[in-house]
Image (cartoon, rainbow, N blue to C red; front, side):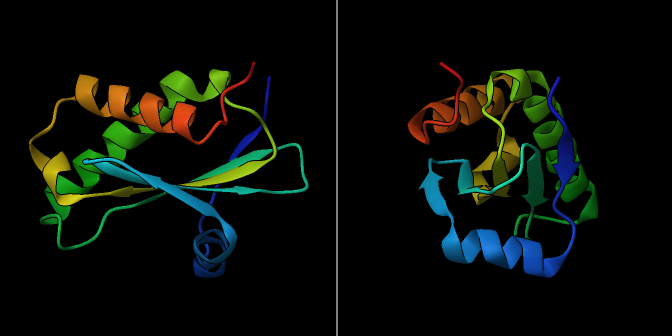
Length: 112
């Protein structure tokens, strides 16, 4: 079992934005940065442009659930930031899950 932690501090997010690789689709922007530890850290970012607090919190809950559902497939030693894009507001969980899986494959962070 791998250890998953959260990115919480602003400087942690900034480091991933600055040095990480970004991959995007219609709903999500994914930033990936390889770290030197054996743990995986994940952060979620939903801008106020997306909607009011209720909408933003729903999207974060869906992100957390979709990530939890797929985390066992991922390699360790990476920092991940998921950023929501505007069209995600009207999207189902299944579509977000599919989108996230596609981005993970594109980023080549799925275990062989």
